[in-house]
Amino acid sequence: MSETTTTVVRPPLNGVDVPTLFATLNAVKETPEIAKFRFRARNTWEGGTHSRSEFSGFYGAMQEIQHNHVTEVHADHPAVLVGADHAPTPVEFLLHAIAACLTAGIGNIAAARGIPLHHISSTVEGDVDLLGILGLSDEVRNGYRSMKVTFTIAGDADADTLRGLVEQSRRRSAVYDALTNPTPVEIEVVTH
Amino acid sequence: MSETTTTVVRPPLNGVDVPTLFATLNAVKETPEIAKFRFRARNTWEGGTHSRSEFSGFYGAMQEIQHNHVTEVHADHPAVLVGADHAPTPVEFLLHAIAACLTAGIGNIAAARGIPLHHISSTVEGDVDLLGILGLSDEVRNGYRSMKVTFTIAGDADADTLRGLVEQSRRRSAVYDALTNPTPVEIEVVTH
Image 1 (cartoon, chains in turn yellow, purple):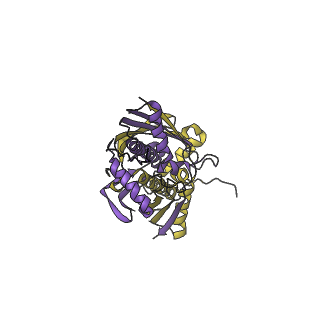
Image 2 (tube, rainbow over the protein chains, first blue to last red; image 1 turned 90 degrees about the vertical axis):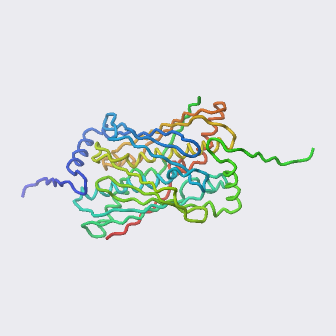
Image 3 (cartoon, rainbow over the protein chains, first blue to last red; image 1 turned 135 degrees about the vertical axis):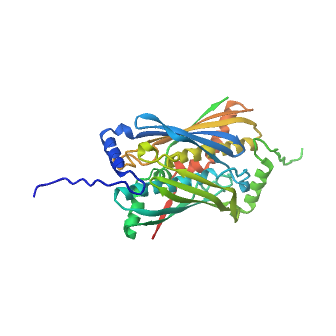
């Protein structure tokens, strides 16, 4: 028997264009510079605790790229925290970010592994004691004490295989890393 | 001269109801249980790397509270990352979260200090090398290498005073803490 290399070419699955996904991986392997991305948001104060951010584009794959459409997202504090509740709070967007990041990963990984999925949903909870941000305690942290993501997932695979998708997504999640490990944040101020 | 206690009662300013803000602080001082909040998001997979989150309410001030309106926010990967670019990426929402959190804090702190502000805007940039999430390097982290928030701020105060508002907001920011320090994230999976 001669040694052969078998390449499994997976078809598109779960709404993921798997051939293009693997082609992208191969392109990045050859030119790692492609993988350097800079994401951006532009935020404007609307008064009180209300502001809005605009996402128009980013740098990646060695070029400036525009999103298909510009997205505007607002944030505010709720009435109970003396805001006008025009929109969810800033910390609630962290819950969206981690759920969306893990879910996108699960979709991609299942497709790459040839596993059809029927459903992914999740509930994310973040517990925070506001004694920190209100300046009433130096022992209580400002951010979430803890976050919990509970996934419900259904697909053509046994429970262990489905759990394996979530675990692999966690291992490769940008937002999971950004939250569970320290991210350096620099703040610069220009005054007028 | 007799000793007196002077209480400065600040009027509403910058869209912030300062008397209510201080009343809230006093209420929390007396009943710290008020400060325990649990925020929530419910995320649903739409296929591929696209999902949406719904924010309807949260627990806080010892009760379940509904937002004024339910907000739905989508996320997706861009075409260059084999997504359909229906919405910003999950990591871009981290940029919104930190800008909105710091900005709300600046508004509140300026009002509490009696400083009228005319303008706050910011640009947030996050640099990420996707060799991590693509599984092509074990040395590159999955999340942002670094984030940078650049504020432009104008108000009736000198530059040092305006910078002091941003610095105090950073010191009390929930999202700044969540990103710059480790946040424990638990993941649970229910399969069907």
